[in-house]
Length: 329
Image 1 (cartoon, rainbow, N blue to C red):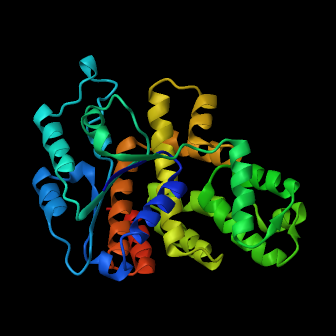
Image 2: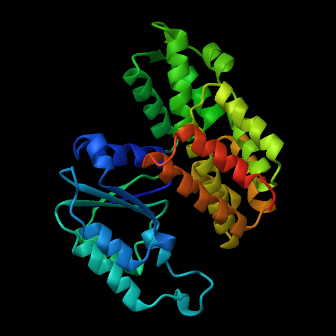
Image 3: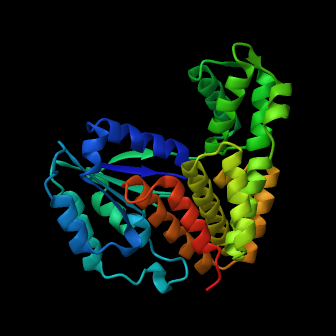
């Protein structure tokens, strides 16, 4: 099978990715036949070899590639809107995707999708597409209600409204807060007072503090912020996902700003309903270069791959990553 998972709602995207992985058999066996790539540095020969390799000790091979379409997206500043890539490169990658064998499950992931993308137009007919746009407020409230019910709890409409106000459309944070609230309320209905008592901007503040310290290479502050998040009960995987999410937000804000988009439209497109999150992300986008963001994002991806493929313990991976990023050269 060949899948395309696209959209800024990375929580739902990851849930779909995990669902596909679960359908492929025993996770331990699948891990021996799983490859995860960042398309920006993926060579066609390596891609072809991996996609066509027979799975070992597993009924299927899983290949996940992030940003393959982005690699061939024409840049807005290019004359004639043409990206500086050779047509044969697009044809080669398209041919590899089209010729992938039944024993390989190929998943392409994108934070956004442009249907005029030349590679997308070449292979869209062979992809099973799943798109994950940001949830608007009514959808967000429905999602919270379903999530609470799934966790075995109940929640009042006022508490739902307050959760949306405090957290916004960040499903990662919402899922964590809902778990905490459900445990706290036990079998009674979660109320507005529960939300006020347990949920606030503290974890977002620590994430922003961590991101700022990494950008500015302040090792002591970065380490303190990381330990504070861990002490609050957040796993290394959660911290890594939140750090990656914040970087994606500031990169997207910077890109949309460069295209002349208005702040209100940017907030709508990115689902940034919470004022605190929007203001801090906007500040970070304005203070640091796009090259700095991209460099950190690549290192984050490498740390994530190392943890998911078992090359490094998840906690050690985030500890080393933060220490490396926040240390001045």
